Length: 421
Ligand code: HAM
Image 1 (cartoon, protein in one colour):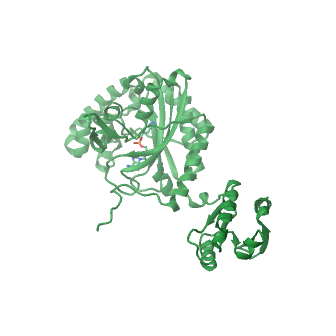
Image 2 (spheres, rainbow, N blue to C red):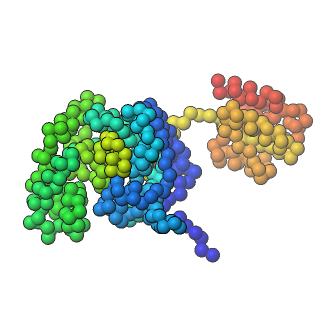
Image 3 (cartoon, rainbow, N blue to C red):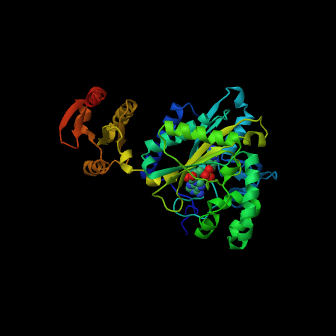
């Protein structure tokens, strides 16, 4: 019989890895809450139109990468390819703007994009992200970038990543700039790749972030978006730069950074890793002042980012994760069936006061249980044999230094409590 395997582009997170995941998650929860962001959890699937209306019909995500199917009643449903649209839907549906003029939300969860799998690119992957609604001032942008910075810094990644920043202007600025860019590119149309020729029609800005050297050469003398800024666009960027400098967050202005989702306006940014290969974007985000209205809500500015957790974990320094507080682990060896209920009770009580305790449901010999305890790196063993049962005691053994002593069963909790003081 064939063994069933996980699907292409999906991964199991096995126990040895899930420890790292939990630690990354705890950093995210801690930093987000510290900055006033509260967790939101939205469903994994939504109506397809939520994504086509927000991310944009012409984007790669919507046109090529979504897992979409018709439900039994004919409604088109999609596994979420990103979370900003879902968070905006929820923000509108639950009238969150009524609760306070600024809503700060964060999330952690799986997403689905049918991309060609490669290193750092999966079909099911995980993001954490934050979104802030209600303020269009640049200090809100600075706050969002500072949260990203703080999390990456806690993960030890800020030395190996560059923050690329751009302002893609308001809608009017972008419309004028797109015409100028198209005019400039027209004579080179035949030199562009098929993908870029398609983008020339649908979204010429996306040609700017081409990876092709030939196209980058052509773009060297292309018009710059900064020449099309309104005074407000210019002012927004200048103030943001000032705030980031004030917080000592290094960044590079990169006028070629446009991002692959249609909802952005003004600020866009990305943290790119210097160690990851082709898929080097660790975290990306930007301002989306028109999105709440596009999805049927009141005009509300918004800004946020999301980071790929697999990518962060690929380059996170493992040592950072080994500084877990040392807790004595206990392996409870019961050698007599009559003692099992005692072993189960004492183990449960020890766990309740915070110890990690392992028992052996295979009823194996003392030797093999001790071998198992050593394999797991357990510090202490408790041994309950026939004589201990008769004396209402249990033998304690320190597996590191070999110390052994007999303790009364009624004294076990106090004994371990004193041991860690
Ligand atoms: P995005 O740039 O599409 O933005 O994704 C953000 C991050 O998710 C990327 O920088 C990357 O680390 C990770 N990522 C994306 N696709 C994959 C994949 N196939 N496999 C592994 N990791 C991946 C968004 O999703 C926006 N919603 C971000 C945002 C929030 N903008 C405003 N608020």
